[in-house]
Length: 428
Image (cartoon, rainbow, N blue to C red; front, side, top):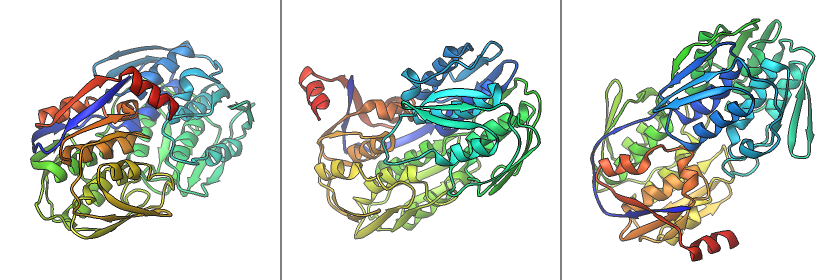
């Protein structure tokens, strides 16, 4: 195991290329199960979740070939292999295997997913959708068993707006008989990306990106080639890094519309943000203003950017309030920021950030993916060296992070954990 070390105080300058969207990739790879011929996915991010999903497809009889940012998937010999344990437990997005395998084979056994521990994130809306389509769903010994004689289109209203449930129901419904209508559907760009792939495979989907999605089932889906959209969360993270330490950071290969809510907040703080067709230029300011931010479903401020944005607010003048309406356990980074000298108080779903307090390098631990990003932001702003453990969380969502930051002028490197550090982590 490794730790990430950052020497703070070095300004960032230059251009950074944004990778393909992690939250698209983890749904697009399982979606390939539904095809009857090879699927090629381009612009994949270099993250551990992609490798884990490719390995899962091989476990159920598929063949995969991953070279650079392109994955070729051969689904012809796949079968409904039960996946109650093992790799399926490593990432939360493994639940997309449920919808894809149910849609293709009318049955699946999938272990309850892992990934970041962000408190209760139930899959009840996913199960509600599967049952509406005609599946019998049971939970036995930590695995979900799905079985259907046939899947029939239905009208499904999601009680809460859920990206995962929206995509999973789409995957299960594209080969169901008749018409499926998903109401109160999520509108995230990643849903449009998945719908585009499925449509290129021969699916009949209308309304992706709106709150009502209509799917008319088809008998067969064929392979295709698809390029993933840029990652809006990586885009936002580098915009925040540029706001924190950037003399001039050009974030390239982006869709600016996908990060409008962040752009507005950065400008409100006094940061210069110039937007072009597929690039965003960010320059920091010496006098950052405090702002209040509330996370909302898309197109509101993303919960996935709340944590790195909170790190930035520690250096703003005045008091900022950060409210997370999506996940109530997404403040685990606060204790780590306090170790670095931040003055933050958590009250329920909100954090009060008293800004303008210098940060000091410290030994901290990433509890989840975006908490890791927040500690990287803090480490770059801090005096001295920051040591971050839990790097495996960061590797799940940010491909080549160190090299990208080094290219901008950051002093960042990895070291192996000592036996003492490994023991401390094991006992914590």
